[in-house]
Image (cartoon, rainbow, N blue to C red; front, side, top):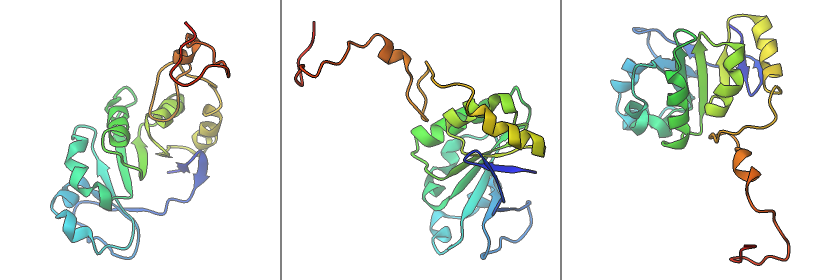
Length: 176
């Protein structure tokens, strides 16, 4: 599947592992949630290669909290396009848990949702077709401003009714 990172088509450096496969220590991997939960956070300290986990959208992101300092990627699943739970997971991982690694959208990822995924905290995507991958970059340019606040950018609405800034105003003073 084509992989998009920061709006560009890229090579995916990660290897996805199934349930019973041994986890290599020399390549970046995406492991199932069950494998990660069977480990202790301390047992992952010696790992010198990036480690990612696939978090199903029916599992709470709080399960990952003790592992977050050791994870470089969290893959969130969109099993069908109308199931938006991964949007909430991504936003909570960024805002509530302060996760700074890659958050990847997988599954039924649609071009129409791409910009909103970026605003929710996603920064990488697996898409089904190459033509979709090329269209994703265009989706980033569709809107120049937003009224809803999000983790990835400011909302312009709150500035619409703000008093105009006056260089003559001193800190703590009001123009009213």
